Image 1 (tube, rainbow, N blue to C red):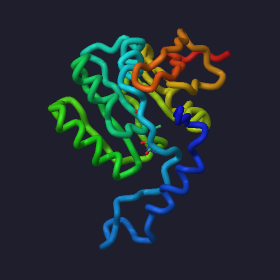
Image 2 (cartoon, rainbow, N blue to C red):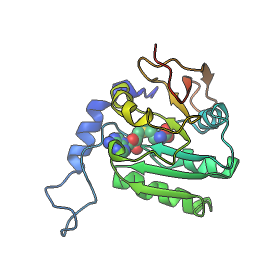
Image 3 (cartoon, protein in one colour):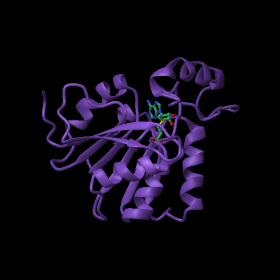
Length: 194
Ligand SMILES: C[S@@+](CC[C@H](N)C(=O)[O-])C[C@H]1O[C@@H](n2cnc3c(N)ncnc32)[C@H](O)[C@@H]1O
């Protein structure tokens, strides 16, 4: 995303279609694919993730959900730096494996769980913090799920915010990792409409 997400949906479709096989789940040759991801994987730089978690004021009692968790970095950092539970969802079996390896490598398996699931089917009832790095239309589609979050839950969007919702804070940060600027928007539930 200098390498920006908006450039990537076509790539997402090509990449995922190539990987998808005409094999039913569980059959021989099943690669673990559920369906084409809605966006390809691009990781949020670690220093930007740290800022997102700080903006959300993550505490030990929080439960962080990363919808489209990629390599699991947001969850690993949340558990390591804030000592909280964290759950990651990704539809791509390669990302799920990478996330689980990342969790194991960093010794945070007691706090972090990774689940292969379509984020639009996830029940967010226990989540209190959601760092989000997805495309605008995905954020729009997630809004009904986000509106059901417990009061006081925090959402921090990276680069693409929630249409029609007023952020509590907007911050632009330059990452030391990619020297690019990243826009971060914090929202607290109940969400305030424009
Ligand atoms: C832009 S990456 C963000 C990764 C991570 N959250 C981060 O910021 O470092 C988006 C991720 O969403 C996943 N994804 C795309 N569509 C999905 C869907 N419908 N359900 C679950 N995961 C999805 C992709 O596989 C990819 O890993």
